[in-house]
Image (cartoon, rainbow, N blue to C red; front, side):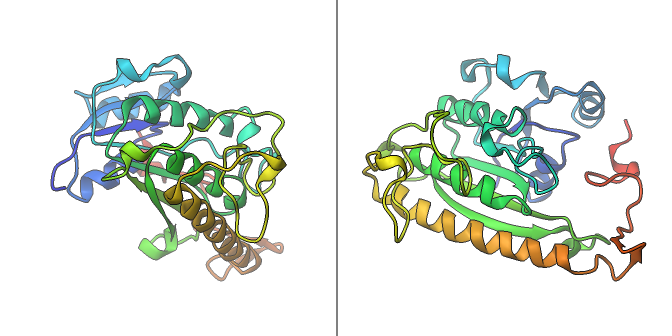
Length: 263
């Protein structure tokens, strides 16, 4: 797909859609970002794009149709550095609004990004939910160091494609506060994992693509989590400061460098 329209959720300062544009896709049609400062940055670099503030107040019917919806939902509850509440947490739980928009808008592609250090708390669930909406998914682990940055900051990107299977959608993912949340706060509709029964004795969603996707997601979450733990045990950039890992980027613990996020 040489040209594709893009919609962005949890846009921040636009890093994900910028990457898609650099890959030859675009244009960006709309962005959703609650932070006022970030919206000023977005307005500078995408002055003609429609912008919305709060994903919780948006309906899919309000948004113009796009080919790609991308976004990195909040990591505070899935990161190893956070509260580890998974998708039940107040911040990372906004994933449910992400999947609600995808369900209503039905883009051809979905791109989701989040931390690798807490992949076991989100990756399996996110991929399962997308499979239940009729998407095939693949998870890709990319570290900032692999693209030339002087720090590791490993991330996971889930790329979902609806081509050819959108009409075979299984049951929609639903929020279930009573479901166990080990390995990613997976809803009860999650298909059977290899080597074990369905969680909570619930019925298994009868969709072969979703079942294969859930098994792949569980395997990938384990592999990515193991790689992230190895990164954390090792030295970042070969430097130490009082025994703590040291990053060459000093301004903040994550995100973009100062020159990139200036409005």
